[in-house]
Each structure stands twice: as structure tokens, then as C-alpha cells.
Length: 278
Image (tube, one colour):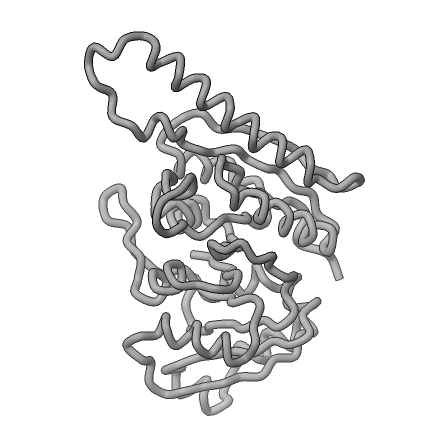
């Protein structure tokens, strides 16, 4: 069976979490026989400071020096962590807004590796808070979002799928097929599935996965809880999952991306990698 994952796009920035994303992406790419591109997209810390009139040309010089330092730091991480023999490239974005520019280049990747927005203060909080979901929505590409933590995420072994019969969930599952084939356990969580599916009439998610040589257990409940995002994370923890697969739900409002409740909760509180698609 062919390998659908050939090219990963990793978000590179000036934060310490870039090393975590890159290291994970390299191990993941090696497992799937894929190549990676690290795409540097980062607002400078100096750009986050307001510009006061009359501060003089020295401020512009300091800003430029800070940007060069941040870029050099990220590039050094890339050169240190890229394994010998793994196809890996480096690219940079210097235009704004950041998310649309990144999404345009994401069109040429099979899977994105992004990071959860970090709490409190630090380099990662300079990125737009909605960067991951906006990139997913604008590009239409699936993304593996890593939690904001210093821990080293393991490669997916026990996978939980949050299933509902929607486009986003179906796209997420389809994108995850190469991962699911290599998983040691696949479990499906669903709430409020249709009567026909529950009664075993016609195709369902289990039969779809079986057609792709993937055996999965299915945990079905009739009513969807109001705090679905919290419940998903709790169940994933109980099942010892190291990857959650789900649709990224929301709607476009003018030029902003408005998340649904479950997606918003998961991206805010996640403690494991999450594969999302819209």
C-alpha cells in the first residue's frame, strides 16, 4: 500500500518550542519515509513594542538586529537537529499577516506540524493566538498540533478518533490513515451518531477503516455533552492515547476564524498531540 505522507511542513519560529516541533517532525518523517521543510514564520519581539515618535533611527537598527538574531537562532536549531540522510529544507516568510502567508505555502505539504499557543509570556505568545486554526482553515491541509510543553512527544501508537459524520472529521481521518496503519491501537469516540449508522445499516467509520486494513474499537454514546472538548481530552487520557484525531470546527466571520466550542477547548487545554483538519 502506498505511503501518502511525502512532505511535512514544520512551523519554525524564535520560540524554544521550535526545537520540540522539529525533533518530533524528524522522527515522524523518518518513520513514514517523508521529507520536511522548516518554514520560518515569526514576529520579532521588537515588533511587538509600540513605536514612539522621535525615538530616532537607532530603534530601527535595534529592531533589525533583533530580527537577525532570532532568525539565526532558529536556523541554528534546524542545522543541529536535522538528521543526516533525511530530506530537509529551510524556507522563510517575511510578509504579514503571518497566517495567510504560511497557509499559502502549506498548500504544497501533506501534513503540517504546528504548535499550541503558549500561555503566559514568552516568545511563542507573540504569534497570533489563532495561528494554528487559521492556517488549517485557510490552507485546507491537515495539521499535527503539538502541546505547549517541554516534554518530548512520542510517535503515535495509541490513537483516539473523535468521530462525527462531518467533512472535518472525515478529512482528519483520511489524513491520518498512514498513521493509523502503524498504530498499535485505534479507538473511536462518538456521540449522537445517526440511527442508521447505530443500527449497522450501510457504511460506517469502522467499516471504512477496516477497508484500509485498520482495526478499531468504537465507543458510542447517544447524547453529545455540552463540554465535549473537556470530555474528549479526559477520555483520551483514560485510553492512554498519544494522538487525538478530530475535525477542526468553526465558521468564517468576515476575515476572522471563529472556532466551535470543542475545537477551542482542545486547542487551549490539550496535553497530547492533536491531528486536525477542517
